[in-house]
Amino acid sequence: MVRLGKKRYYSLAVQGDEADVYIYGDIVSWPWLESDVTSYSLAKELEGLEADRINVYINSYGGEVAEGLAIYNALRRHKAEVKTVCDGVACSAASVVFMAGDEREMSNASLLMIHNAWTLTAGDPNELRKEADDLETINAATIQAYLNHVSISEDELKKMLDDETWISAADALEMGFATTVVNPAVTNKAAASLRQRQQIRDAILGRKSQSGTLDIEALATRLKKMMQHESSTTEPEPGSCPESETETQANGLSGFMAALANRLAEGNEDE
Image (cartoon, rainbow, N blue to C red; front, top):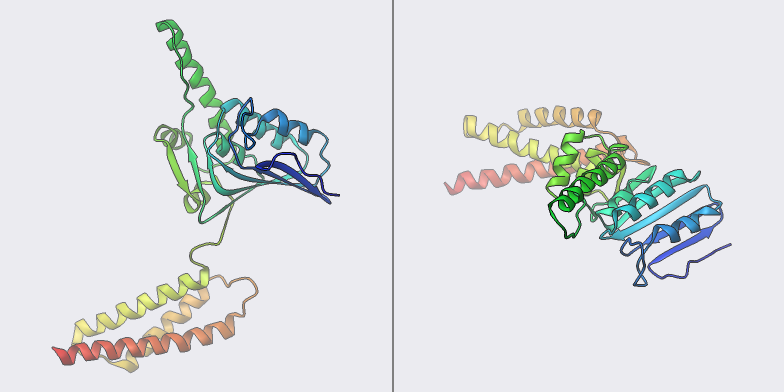
């Protein structure tokens, strides 16, 4: 059975034991646009929802704090496992909704943004002081929503809120805002290859600077040991064959070493 919400940008679809929620608009208490999302509309959708897993896809600049907190709590209260996905940006109140996920996924081309609550107001000095105190109380609630999940200290979090901070996927993962980053820029295998190539270059340049000539045999022995150490300390990619990949990598790096050595030798001849 598939059930679709009426809104194009905010919708809920149910299939089997999974439900997909799309929040692709502002989070408000009174919807004016087709894309607007309210805590009431989402809470009513969740109220009778029978699902083992809820996937919440977010691309929103945020909106009202109270609405964001209500959606956060409604998702946390549901018995289903919740996965939140930042499809583009999850800013302000939308970043609070993002924190509701048991699993919180970002891509390397998505962003979070967090800041202190703010408002527009008017009144005498007493009313303005009260408004400031109220904002501090509101901030405390959103801070707690973040602290329920992040690995940084409260002081560090408050500094980020004061600075109105944009958070990359890598930083979000490191600080605990996200639990997963998909499409990582550099895989374990690629990172190991980059390190090995840099080590080869450094080793060749080091030999060249010490003696002015290259002992290829001694250098090859040293590089072989470096590669073996790297292979033993690098976690293999899922579904990979470490032995065959190490042999292929060794052949490729040997060719790279020879090409680099020849290039450096040509440089010596030019001098």
